[in-house]
Image (tube, rainbow, N blue to C red):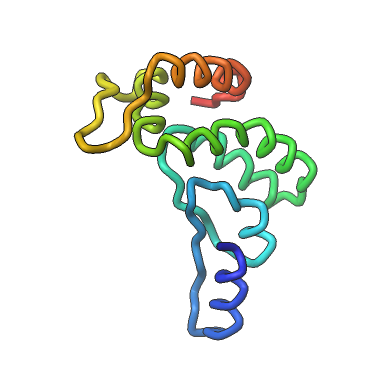
Length: 129
């Protein structure tokens, strides 16, 4: 929750060297504005999270928001399907050799994969790695 970053920084003052966000990067823009020093999303689109962060660091908030809006459907899909999504994307990007997840975790069915196909078609051209 982005407000926790503001509250932590205000309460800790100089004793705090920095606060990182998380939640898959879903609050990245708000967290940055509130003083976050970074974010710890899962690793399936790290190159795109870095690109957003770099835009923020150079003051290109419009470009950062535009790129964030392009990946937002995937971030929302990830929030529904969790680790299965991360593994599937890492598999499709050639980073993992298997998309298998451990039980009793969630898994993607055929219809989920159809939706993920459409989402990834919009962001694959943005991949930098």
